[in-house]
Image 1 (cartoon, each protein chain N blue to C red):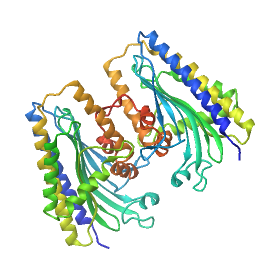
Image 2: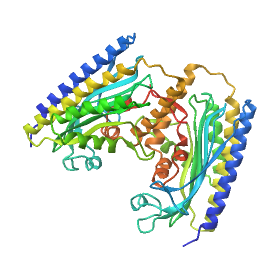
Image 3: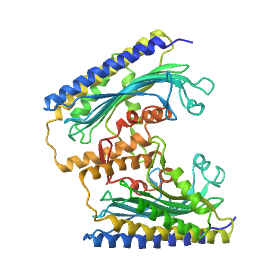
Image 4: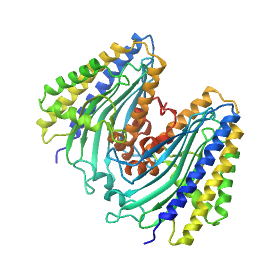
Length: 287
Length: 287
């Protein structure tokens, strides 16, 4: 069995450096809007039944409440341990007899003050069980969608995908459309993006290829999303548009609490509750 | 096998008459506060994959947005059909070979404008599969708890229970404490009340006893809750107290979307989405 320790350390270092660059960029946007908002960072340790797990890892939750970013959370975590036997059955390459895992990743959700500015989610991760794989994606969640924003978001992720495999973008875009869907409402939670999982690393060459792709997904996000924010952040809005945003956020909360796999993974593996639920909107309404 | 048609019709008639009395009382409270708010009623039919189910039943969703009641939903539904084989395994007396069911019940959730006034939930129901049983309960959800309100609420349900079986209240109060708990937050969603289920009707005598108990649970609710509302509805509150209420409502939404059995039952049996999610708060915040 491959020892994935070094690979996990490299992935983690990348996720942390990406976090630093994204947070710096988001703080720059706040400066441009005349705000001095900054991220605060809270470290946490993995817990089991309320007790810290020795050598179980943990993470750092970054949170900023600003003028443009009503609430943005960026979490980097690196956890390891053993799945419960029951949960192991649901995870790629894990089984009740061999439930050890490591997981390192970055997860970001931004809810914006201006309803014309799209909310966004981005997450990439590297997991090892008896297998090792990358997964992740990003999706755009405009309360008031603009075709140009949607097209630019998709085009940038398509470019990142196409540089690695022309089959990636059609497949991963369709996967996002399938995943970011609220079955009980029969609506998508946003305008999509990409979603990929189980990008398996059978050997070192596969790891390098998948890691390079995952880095490019992060770069694509860092390139395109700040452009969309700057495009819309000064656009005036009225109370009716704000209400549309708040109702739309109610749907977003429903998706994350009822359906989201990442939320479930966090709750089942002793993740930090504030970090897991940072994705919830700062305000929401149900009419 | 007993034919439960008449029993179901009697239970349904009771739930509808209880609904009428509760709604009239809540509208009276609005009048006392100088508001002319009234319930609107929307009928719905049971659906499967977006198509109405012939003879599948349905319900009526009552909704009022007032001055005292920021949002109160009262739903009465009577549905019948067959569970999916997978879901049947999780339901008392149902199995994949024999998945027919009927369910009739009343469900109420009130979110109040004033943080000093407790929110509340009440639900009673009669179900038949190969078995037949009553279930239900009520729990008080004060954003800012008062000992006197909590004591009065518990005392009134205790009286209703004690008139039927001295073992009921300790058991059903403990069941509520167990059920209305948010595991991922490690907090209760409110100050409890009672919760009961599978109060089985092996014969007509058992049906009559359990039906009488279930009616008394409804009467207890109608007696005690309006008293608590009138006690607090004119108490002044400030922005900080309102924010506490909105944060507390975020927890309430988490409980209902992640854990609530009634929500799951509704989503799995083609219930009306607006009726099922009427329990969600009109406004909530996550800080």
